[in-house]
Image (cartoon, rainbow, N blue to C red; front, side, top):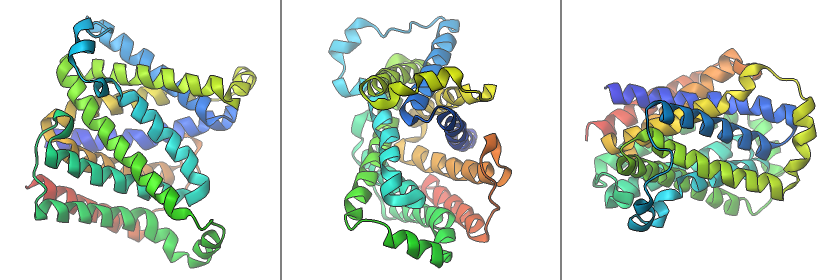
Length: 312
């Protein structure tokens, strides 16, 4: 039960991080630079924690030759997932940008568990497990998609403004979600190899930071540096990386205990709860939005689905 609670809490942290990074992105008008700053802050935070625990920040040299190359790719997959969401939003809109990656996360996590990929725990893909996952998807639909569908006038206007090749972008969204679930499994195994979830998160953040700074330098985002120097924003706008560091560390810790599939479902529940809290209270200068009855129903449905998977 403690592990379940921890998974929900770290899931709540992710939308909080998103709200904070959105405030930073608004101030400097650059998504990539805001993400690079967030990743770098998380990397420094994890480095300090690991050093305080007398852990070596550099993995033993023999691991680079004895372990598969994909073990070090978690940070890269995280950047692809992050960049993918940025690319998806103008083509699919807010709802589908959330729904498609979540669908990919659920599908990939079940496949990873069924075949024990990336040295994760083996959990056979039983009928009951599939039903639990479908119930979670239904809960996500009730929470995110149904409120917008009920406002049909807005929905129709959005549908008519989308291009015909939406399905390609939907497939891309599912793919990025699958990569996110893969990152969770990889970081979980990396934590086992390094005997430290913190060190695994540090490696993932370090790789992600390097990739993002390369994107910043190679794109127009570097033009945002003058705005960064002149911008005025609250102190907490720098704290998104800390929440992201806790999120990745928690995932690395939980995957060896619960398996990729269950961790993905629990964290998704926390993410939805956190998103509703951010909207309802207008946290970190986000616009306030009231709860809707369908969203509360979706949370209950998701809890039922997660409970069903946990009971297997």
